[in-house]
Image (tube, rainbow, N blue to C red; front, side):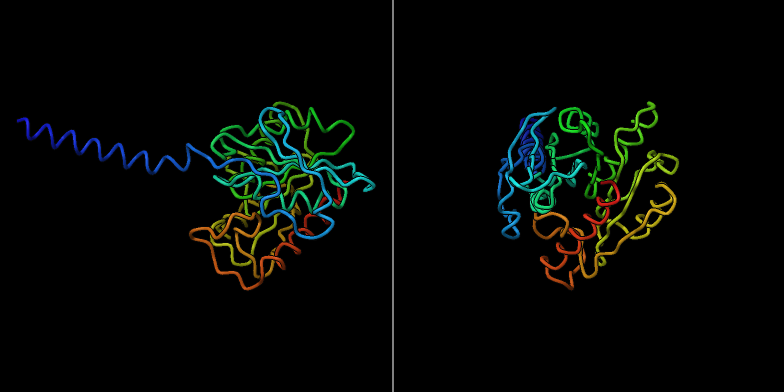
Length: 256
């Protein structure tokens, strides 16, 4: 009997260790680092990036001195299990064009844990501005969910929604919400299913465009390395990022 219990205890210990090994990368997230693989050119290098606390830590990309600030505030929700600094490259490029750009940090790097983070950021930085909420992958789904939840409560704090390799969840029907929406998708993105992205357009305001970034993949929206299950790019990351920035700025120009 003692031998049986020893085997039971050993099996349980192995199971616990295995479970902790799987959970550890989720429970213990890497540090928040400014400037980590984030500078693309001289203009983005001139941008000032700080960490602020507004309902949680947030990367804030400020337009460089002398750059006229646009009247659109940009908030970027990161993809699932992706650190905020992976999108600092995009925030810097937008800030270099005059857009104050914010990237909130979420518990466990999962926007689903706190989809309403945008409210505190809008309260702090949104006075006198139109607000554009962008989100990559899970972050895009939760950005759409936030807008839907606000609309159900009779509030409309966001003027624009830009989905990056993402689509709204089923409970976030924004078709009747007064909103400018857009959708960017990598041509070879095999993480955000193309059929689901296409179907998701029915949940967005009529006429929402879907812009395909030629040769790009899901992970090119953020600088976090290759992603399991993604497609194979047929363009360089730099070329894809240039197209992403151009499409994003074209979208924001419609709000400015």
